Image (cartoon, rainbow, N blue to C red; front, side, top):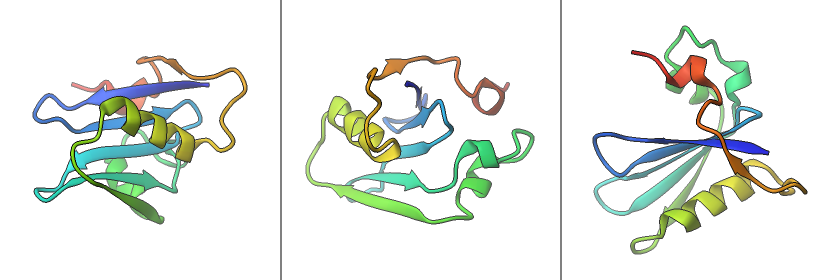
Length: 105
């Protein structure tokens, strides 16, 4: 199974997107680190629209992190939540996934 990481150029937040369109977002909310796991998939969204509004139309599960989690721990947690059970072949990072949503000028 493939996944993509979108790192913010402004802060330490990032998005994790799997090849089936599952999405998690990691950021700091001025109090602690948080991950949002979106129930809606990118495959249900229109690439011409603002994707975050569409993703937010369904449930969002939230995890508050204690302290300063390692990026690898956050990614592993998100991939485990987004795809259960974990794929037998493992995970491969592929930054070309969902380009129509995220590679815009």
